[in-house]
Length: 206
Image (cartoon, rainbow, N blue to C red):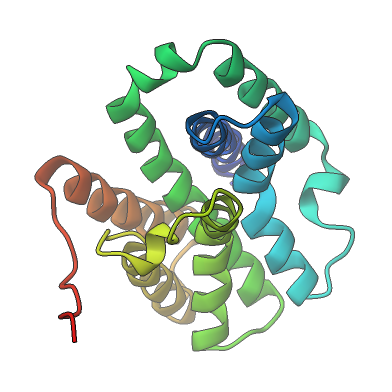
C-alpha cells in the first residue's frame, strides 16, 4: 500500500509540472512578463486542489502544507519563460503529460472527498474540480474561454473516472486497484481524445 501511495505522489508531482508548463505557456503566448507567467503556472498547477480544500474546509490548502508543489510550479514556469520554444516543440508530449496529471489529480480529489464522507455527486464534483479548476483559472486569467466549456473531452473524462472510483469504493475494491483503474480510465479517454481528435458535440449557433 505504501508503495502505491508513493507512485501516486510521484505522478501528482509530475502532473504538477505538466500543468505548470501549460499555464506558463499560456502566459508566454499572451506576452506576459515573468511574474505573470509564474502566476499562471502556479495557478494552473495548484488552483484545483486549493479550491477543493477551501470548499471542504481543509485549510491551509495542500500546497501550503507541502511547498514542494509551489517550488516545482515556479521552477517550471521560469524554465518555460526562458525557453518557450523548446516546450512548444514538445506540445504533444505535454498534452500526454497533462492527461497523466488529469487522471492523478482526479483520483486524489475523489479519494479526499470520500474521506470527508461526501456522496456520489459531491465526490465526482470535487474530483473533477481538483483536475480542472486550475485550467479554468488559467484560461480566465489569460482571457480565453475555459477549455472545459469547449468541445474538448476533458472534464467529461474526469467525470467518468470519478464515477468509476466512487462505485469501486462502494464495492470495497482495494485502494491500489481503484486508484489505478480510475486514473487509467481518465488518462485513456483523454489520451485517445488527443490522439484521435475526439470531441464532444457543439451547440448550434442561434
